[in-house]
Structure formats: structure tokens, C-alpha cells
Image 1 (cartoon, rainbow, N blue to C red):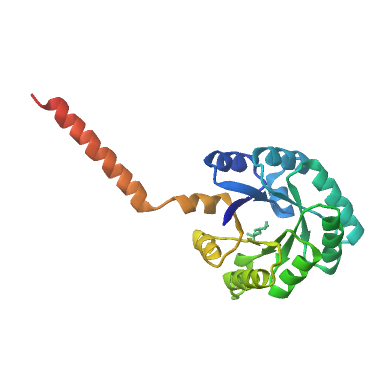
Image 2 (spheres, rainbow, N blue to C red):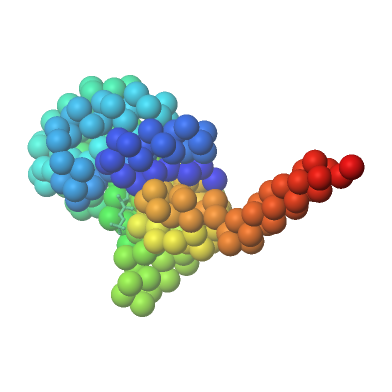
Amino acid sequence: MELFLDTAQVDEVRRAAAWGVVTGVTTNPTLMARAGGDPETILRTIAGLIPGPISAEVIATDVDGMVREGRHLASLADNIVVKIPMTAAGLEATHRLSREGIRVNVTLVFQPGQALLAARAGASFVSPFVGRLDDIGEDGIGLVAEIVEIFRTHRLPARVLAASIRHPRHVIAAARVGADVATMPMAVLEQLMRHPLTDAGLERFLADWQAAQQARAAAP
Ligand code: E4P
């Protein structure tokens, strides 16, 4: 499973890129608004830092507007994927853009029927929102598992991108059920690498090494 960063903060992308574990980035209008600054500059910069897919979301809600914005976003960099919401207009825009060779990530997917339609319309990525489903007492990872099963059974080429990831257990669960990608905030990526026993273990190794050095130096 690939790991994407869910952010529009350039400094976070730069930091994660240096670790060599992140192969793509997802943004959305909320993340863009939070980042401030010019969205096109942000997208171009991020697209230059990570060679993999960078999702950029349209704001328009009508088909022609989405297609127009999608074409423009895709022209900003070769690795930009256009993010389109799961609506009837979104499906039509996905169909039109994918026929032009523009990759689309269909977002705001909350049930398997939506995923099937998005894949049939030509989406390259389909994004089920795990955390937001869990928030209302539903089973976000269960949805990811269902979509993975449907896509594999019917050999649909769309990739399952587990989104709205809130904690490391979501990432591991998404990997176990076969998601192709999980996109997560920087805080979750950082949590994935930590364990208190790692810190305690390192502290102990260094203290033992130091003590041995001092003993050697003090020896006659
Ligand atoms: C996905 O592409 C979205 O940007 C994102 O994962 C939404 O997550 P949220 O529910 O934490 O806002």
C-alpha cells in the first residue's frame, strides 16, 4: 500500500519527501484555505517535490465548470490528478476528463455503489472517507474492504484510496484489507513511526554505551 500525505502545507510535504516514504499528496478546498497563499503556486510547488499523483480539487459543481477547472488544474503539472466530488455532475465530468487522458480522483465516497459508479465513469482513484464514516457510527474500514473486493472481483482498474484517516490504526487496517493507498495528515504519518519503547530503548542503548566509555576511560 502506498502512503500519501493529506495536506496543502508545503513545509510538511518537504519534510515527508525527505523520508522517502510518501509517493503522493491529496489536497482539498479546506486544506487549501487553511494553508493560505496562492493555490496554484502551492500545487506547482508540491508537484515539484513529490513525483507521484497530487490531487487538486475542483470548486465548480456543474459539469462544464468541473471540466474547465479540471483541464486547468491538470495543466499545472504532469503529476496532478483532478479531484472531483461524487455527484451526478461529478460522474459526467469524470467521464469526460478521463476520456481526454486526465486522471481523476473521485472524492467524498461513503458507500460502495458510489465507488462502483466512479470506477465505471473512468476514475483512476476512488476515495472512501474512513474517519467521517466512523464519526457517525458506521464502519469506514468495512467500506474500504467492500470496495477493494468489488474492484478486484470485477477487475476494475481504479485504485482504492483510503481517505479521512485519523490515526495509525486506520492506516494499518486499510493496508490489511488491501487498499492501494492511504492518505493521511502529517501528524498520523509521524505517529506511524513512533513507539515509546523505541525511544526508551534508544535512550538505554546510548546510556549503556556512555557508561562503558566512562568506565574504560577511568580504568588504570
Ligand atoms: C481526502 O482526499 C480528503 O482530503 C481528506 O482525507 C479528508 O479528511 P478529513 O475527513 O479529515 O477532512
